[in-house]
Length: 382
Image (tube, rainbow, N blue to C red):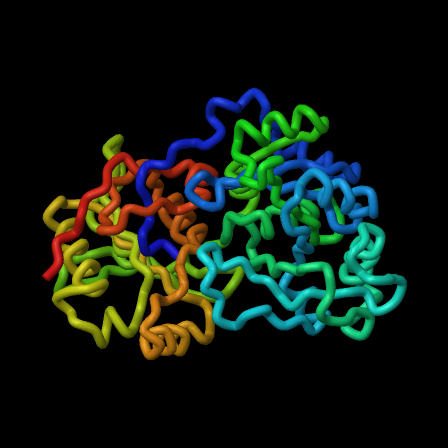
């Protein structure tokens, strides 16, 4: 989520701008069945993936990915399609840094041999995305690795999984994609200089997920302001409380606004992931609750600012946290719903901010929202 919202983001591709294609061009490439490269944020995986709409994933395309991409070839699917196929997650306790949602691996039940050849994997992909096929037409395990895209796409999670599904949908194709990370000859991950050389050598267009976020943001919204009312708090006195609804995965979020947000100066902002265990039952003078209350006091003393309270839409979020505490391990990363907080800030007219946070970690995809952190200030607690 947005617990550690933002330090200033350095555009990973600024010096390579002349090599980048517009999202409109990438959509047309997809529509024509041509492969392309999508690059994510340097503060995320900082990698480029080969991407092609799944319905265009011919044996030749799969072989190209295996031969030149060298990474893991995955099939990106919508949550609804994954449910149709009856696929379960590879792990119900996803501890990976980017929360990539792998399901169990799959194979087409018929029409394949060992399953690993380019032709076999292409066949499995086509069966998996065919609306006339279902769970009885595939078997597990197999040699194709499905990934579940978050509802809301890159407006919710700035990953290649969501980007591949978004591009295919925007191109009027089946909302699914086949992706493969690009590795260098020596086995290291290809970064932007390598990706540009790769794209030029193979005649592929290249674009960024940040640009896809910006493209979708011009046309789509995932939050709606439902209420605006006065609110008085022990911390910071009088506020305006605005309730926002996530229209993709239903959840209500709150923005507490102090003073006038207009003008040219950056706005003081605290984005807080709501956690009942910390915020209500925990030590009110320290920890996350202490940071929230101190941030509210800092904004009140400053005279203006915003506190955004993001609620986790997952129905098992509380039990997941309790389980993490019992097992003495950190809770899963909460960077998945960054788009909700970003759109709330944009709705409030904020573009530059002074971030109140004690954690120096960037939120991926920020460039696509046109938001900029000009300063980060620590929050005194205890």
